[in-house]
Image 1 (cartoon, rainbow, N blue to C red):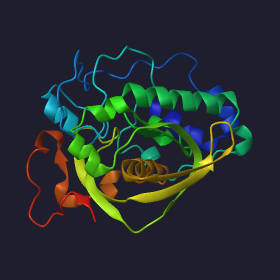
Image 2 (tube, rainbow, N blue to C red):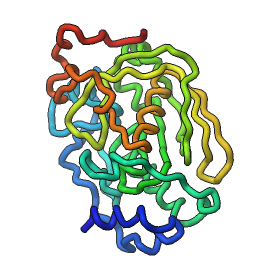
Image 3 (cartoon, rainbow, N blue to C red):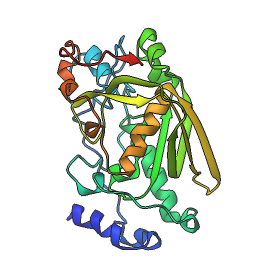
Length: 266
């Protein structure tokens, strides 16, 4: 029934979505796949979103496309849609600029930000909470980056940036430079793979208040933008991965198979 409800949103105007949404809060996302820790330990990371089960902090960090460790308060959040749901494999539609200021769109944005931060993650696209609209949110903090070794964050050109909310984003590359690094996704829990991404991109779109916005990004922020924009076109990272690098998070410490590209910039 929940899937049918989400699919029905594709057939009605955004202005009517709010009337169709369940008025009572959704149940909290299961916490079984997160790893509560009272004190973060030293971590080595290879960037996915979350740990699927209780494993060593080293392995957990390697599963962090983003990782924010520590206790999180329970709250009512939107469920993260998993691979296989059609909403993740189809083109999302643009938000009508006239509807951006509506209570419905603003609530969707607020729910996305809360869900991303509680996961925790560095990015989220509306289809990942079952809403087939072209909206992305992303954020990377000093706290998250501090969990990873400096040599890794330096290699990835990973720097903190404030919350970005972009509606109807349009992405274009700004150079032909690329890099290979592991990625993961909240919608493909428990697995990671190496993906080649452009190192320099530009994204234009609208802010949550309907104002024109342009973001020029490089390094890790550029990777996050590409990952999230892919979601809006029905593309998951597994559609772009280097196939022989696909692995469970428990195997992230194992060497890459012969013939696989080395991690890093090209």
